Length: 161
DNA sequence: GCCAACGTTGGC
DNA sequence: GCCAACGTTGGC
Image (tube, rainbow, N blue to C red; front, side, top):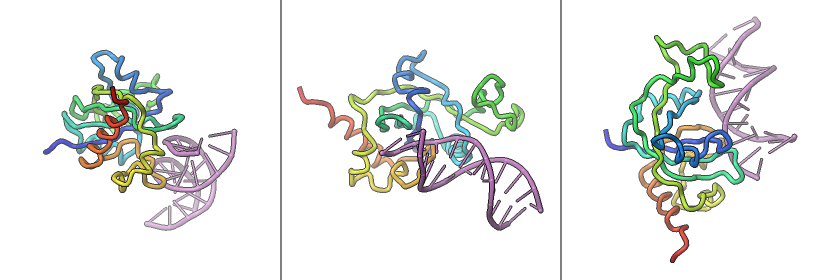
């Protein structure tokens, strides 16, 4: 299967792209996804080498903060089995897990945030799931075209010289 | 299987 | 903190 492109949301107060950059091996298990549609994307479609946009949600301002990549196959989310975890879910059993995750590794932090408001104004991003009214999915597929355009925008925002 | 009530997400 | 939109739960 060819490489796929994704957008993952995280509240920076909880876990930011800076936290990922500073993490051991710049890698983290993307735990805590508790939505079935998002779970299905992770469990059924994510592959090592997939590219990821790291989105800061519930922030001031919100926006795409950088880039990461998938570095593991999907596996059961251990936080669902952990009574101490805020993501504990008694419905998920080790012998039949409900929730899955992948490990992601930091690739870059954008020189400046791609703020949601400017993404909305970008004609070339029309159709991006993130921009759909009422869109709440924390794991979203992104088209190659949109992904590349977002990287281009990130680069273009670097001041010359 | 319907759907009201409730809980969560996330922009603002 | 507000609240619209959405997802889940649970009574029936």
